[in-house]
Length: 256
Image (cartoon, rainbow, N blue to C red; front, top):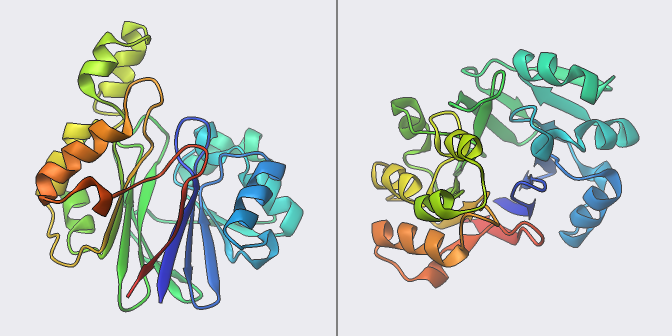
């Protein structure tokens, strides 16, 4: 059985736990050491139980706590060469860095990892599909636009964690200066609610058990707007969906 839970999601820090059997992987760690340990404990996991940490890209809200946690608990880390080069000063000496090819699947314990490249303003960003032989969990955040390859990777997944960063009107009317608005809303920025809905509409959703909206902007979005956009595609009520909250993440979800 595969299950997954969020430590928190947003510009103040990100972390997603994925477990199968005795394998517990942390996707990104954007929190300080003490906060990371506290959030893991909330989900019933001690850092020493982790099989390792995967890093999607070098931005601080995804990488800030990676080296702190890895060095403290001697955890292996998987990341692309581009992410390593861009974040080497911030990451320092990792106890066990493993470099991944964005197009090459690999296994860690009971989980198969299928990385895939995404358009984002980072050096060599990737996102992942997790598989345990029976089910697939697709994760997509920090991406400015969809691509045919993204659609192919996420089609047929049993669960999705999907970025709904901003409402386009709130972003246009909000506090961000024009340059930041263009970055966030651009092709190398973040998916808005309606972009996420358009992407979702193109996927094979026949196996979908769980859909969680993630990386919501606290300034330029609301959970209600994000859920409404996704509900329109799925023809469901908002209570069927979930939100990856910045402070509380979300509790364990199981794939059966």
